[in-house]
Length: 393
Image (cartoon, rainbow, N blue to C red; front, side):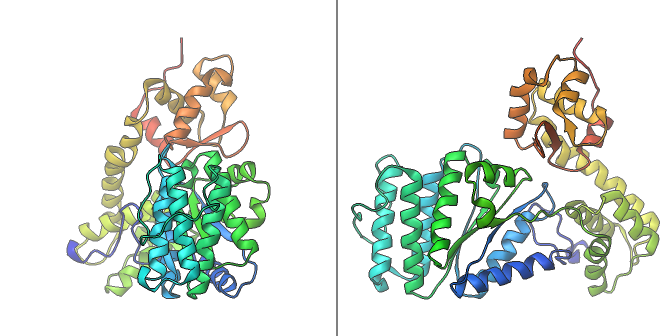
């Protein structure tokens, strides 16, 4: 079939043609926005899940729904070890300018601009970004304590939004990369805004360890946020993700071919898009079992050569040995002690720095105390097929 008409979207964070299996979460989000706008208590969301399950896609849809309500949306993807305060200054400036043009600012927007000027001067190496020509607001967002000053800034932005009858939504992706001090400051700032029923909030997404990290940052975080975890699609949702886009183009898929696609992908959203896209390009009209088998073979080779290979390339020799040992044990999650023993070490503590580096690189995560797991599915199978297990002699 014509690849120019291929409806499937296997790219990173790209919106699939059919966002199936997530409607309940979208409904909850819609209620959350409505309650927040009506000055009613509402818990924000931090969506968690493995890579490729659609977290970024959901954040994109959340932003679209907010913009349809005339909210100002600012979004970012966090990076490991990147300074957080200057990033918040830039996002806050964008949010403030999104509320209204500086020439139409009223009193509370002018205060927010002054607070932002103070915040940027304090947390950006003495430099300050321009905010409508407004000077610093002395005594606000200028203490040098991030949690206090970020709270001041978020509150002033919230008052400015309220004054203009707008809402502000901050969207943070890959939030597991934020440092603990900055995370504490963010939670405190938006907690204070929620207490004052201001139309300003954050929604975030990241790897599955986030509920634990949030609890460690602030004990009340579980009351401020819900932590919906998204993963593999249900059988019906996975079928819909393939069948509905095909049906819209007048293309059919036989039941055996569909069953193979679901089995090969494990109903993992990213893999579903890859397989369906490959099958489309290979088929003449109907997608049959033979075509789907070819598609699965192509996708396996593609994933080995790119998706998985890139992750392997980021690991040092010892880090790769650690992950290969995990794979040798079977399917996770894995006990850190078992990995150390099988690799030939006396205790998991000896491999603590290796484990920490792999977590920093986003290759593994900690689902529970003393456990590790891969951040992408089928990685263990890839390692078993393409690398050798060599325990320490």
